[in-house]
Image (cartoon, rainbow, N blue to C red; front, side, top):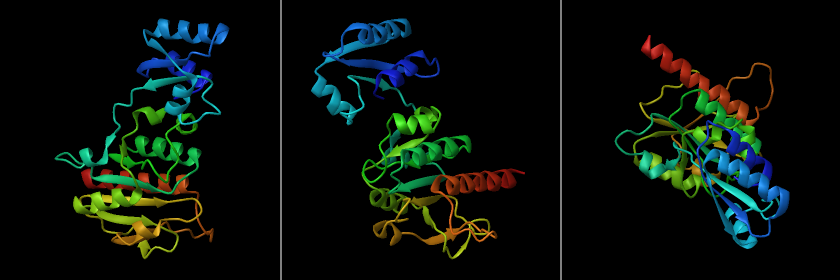
Amino acid sequence: MYGRKPVLEALDDPALEVDKVILADTVRGPNAAEIQRAAKSAGVRVERASAHRVKVLAGNGKQDQGVLADVVAPRMRPLATALGSRAPERVLVLDGITTPANVGMILRTATAAGLGGVVVPRRGVAALDPLVVKASAGVAFRAPVLRCGTAREAAELLVEAGYGLYALGASGDGSLFDVDLPRRAAFVLGGETNGVSAEVAELVAGWVSIPMPGEVESLNVSAAAAVLSFELVRRAVTTRS
């Protein structure tokens, strides 16, 4: 997390665990003092680094304001690790979703629905930055985020692990509400402009769609993710009852 205000908010949030704050050696005066006071109050150490180092770590030289914080995300782990003996049964895969607001809202919705994992590749998807955190209303830090290099890599790992891989699209072969799902299933959510990428599409077992009697062409990807997530909740509740 980078930027003066987001870092101060993280330090002031008792629900978050901040490992450390890194402050550029060019940040002096009241701004530096404010951050140092907040960190001391939260029991968080402050390290000094060059302005260049802070920019490299933040990955955003225009908005870091010379300060960043390492915030602990306890449920974040590599996808390959998650596919072990206690692999999640239902997983979302983000493929080419580049709008931070959409990524943040999907993380919030999936966490609320109790899904076991959301694959957020490091390439081709919006970075997990303050814009994503803001859109998730802070939930991104405790979301079940699974990391890998690309959506294609995620698809290959999931198929190899025995998951049924489905893509969500307006022209899917069957309705989301009717499709029979295997015990483990992963759903690919495509980008805002181009949808599911060709390299991932060739690995999917089937395409499903959300019925829209109102003749709207498609939903925003975060809205579609919400429908999908809570359809999976409905199925789980029905199975238990």
